[in-house]
Image (cartoon, rainbow, N blue to C red; front, side, top):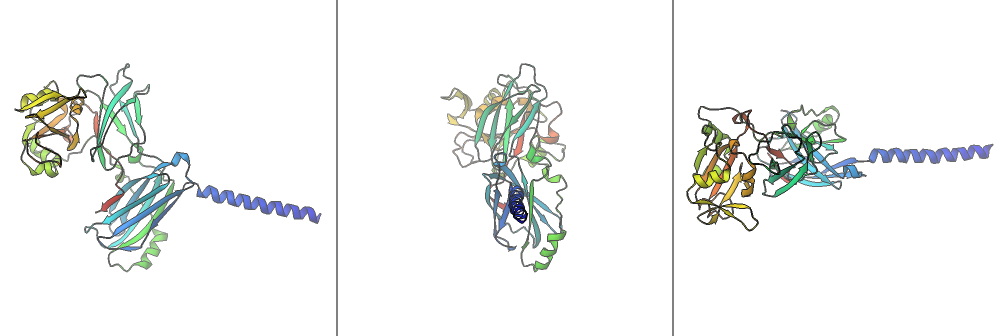
Length: 386
């Protein structure tokens, strides 16, 4: 009997060890670890962040790590998001001199989703079964492809990886004037329940608060209040209209080098001249003396000014000329024309520059189409916190 009891005790011990190991393993699945080198930093310092996802599954092989920084005193918040590839992330934040001294909570939240775009065509016909799209990123990378439409005319662009923001234009494979009306969304810009959350407290500046950080570890609760997800918009929201719309539009939308040099401005808000054009190619070559349309070796149209290639920017993102075929002239708010020799970008400008701005926000009437959007991607691995 004692031998049997001894055997049962051994089996029970082995089972307990097995169950304990299984429980520990279950807790470690997709468990998140975040390392920050210090508890105190100063202006100009670099905060190095190392994140690891242990025992990640194939489904979470490409995930997203959200970082919300909150100033404890004022509850001011900053939002960053990073791609977590193969369970790892190494990023850094340089502390700008605009950051005030104080205690900050670094809230890391894991979302088991990667950037993808969900859409639906509201005015699709039964025979429409695909869309063409061109995505242009801020660093001038271009992705051109097609996406199939489901039976309900919805579509999905999966696992897109790009930094900062991008401009995307949809069009039908065969069309004369782009009249698409599309709604889009992305899971990364919607509220979600994080699968893992880690909070770290750091001090910025000469703040003696080690005891307060200890208190915060048991009392602090992060509340993002839903406002930080408002990052995907049909182009740009404009705050108000002025008596002269084009002046207000310029103030709201023309930035950087585009605002720093003289340009000829063509108004598409109060004048219907652009809207009545057959296409942007014919309009521009007929409007601008010395500008001509030529055909490149790839069979696509090009714009040249005095036989020099003209640079094209759409909403201040450098673009290829063939994208002009996908934009309805009625959706143009303004065109800024820069003479040859005017330096807008780092490339050669001997052929001049044409900057085209689409109607946005309050300037976009309800009757306008909806096929182009600004979308936000991921923050760079080396960013500035300001």
